[in-house]
Length: 243
Ligand SMILES: NC(=O)c1ccc[n+]([C@@H]2O[C@H](COP(=O)([O-])OP(=O)(O)OC[C@H]3O[C@@H](n4cnc5c(N)ncnc54)[C@H](OP(=O)(O)O)[C@@H]3O)[C@@H](O)[C@H]2O)c1
View 1 (tube, rainbow, N blue to C red):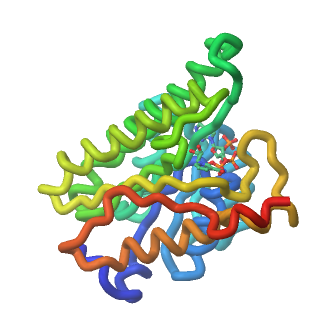
View 2: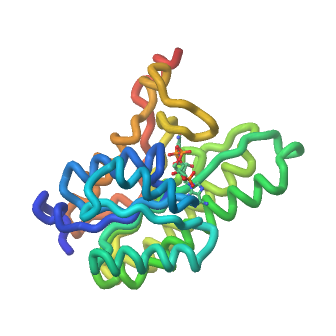
View 3: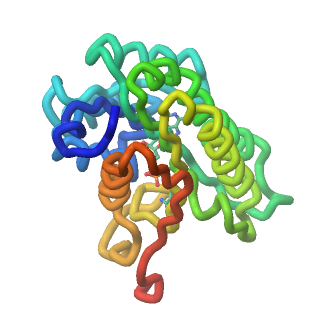
């Protein structure tokens, strides 16, 4: 599909992993305004269905229980999208978590959780959806982070997972572009979400807002077919306003 007009956008079916809150939920809200059909997932099927009901009508939104660290669950989730809407155009591998500790104190369980979700999870979401994306000549996004290019103290596990996501996504882009599948990694800085136990409030006004990433995805979907911004860094314009 040539993603060049708003009319085309309305026809698209999007799957966002980890859409029960934060960035994924904010992006879903934007896509629904533009008439797209959106599936969101989370580890709890009940929670994903509850959030989907809050987001919109049953024919436009689908809530799915799928832990991205389990390939079979991701395959089942994608099948449910295809059963409901018969197509899948855009996949946003967004599910992720961060645990921050000096490397000598980082719990191996937290290391494994970050690798299984942040890194192996994006591979699973791609494996589960790639044939559908070949059919639609679709678009696969990963939500990496500026932590995928800037390392920092207490970030060994998170940095490792996100550097991995950036490398994975760039290599996948090379493999998939001959199929007319676009692949991009988005690398946000601080976003106002529930990440790492945060509760979004006024104090987060200086941060990127989840919906800003939704509008960025729309902008990328509207790029002419011939052009592919494959790696996009996004940062707050005024970090000096942090209180
Ligand atoms: N917030 C930031 O400043 C920031 C900056 C750069 C990048 N990021 C990245 O953005 C992505 C989204 O994070 P966020 O900020 O929106 O955090 P968030 O508010 O904590 O949301 C995380 C989402 O991921 C889901 N999730 C976690 N583990 C999962 C798993 N194993 N399988 C399926 N879903 C899972 C959660 O759903 P359930 O809890 O319902 O399972 C939730 O919907 C992450 O990859 C994060 O690393 C965040």
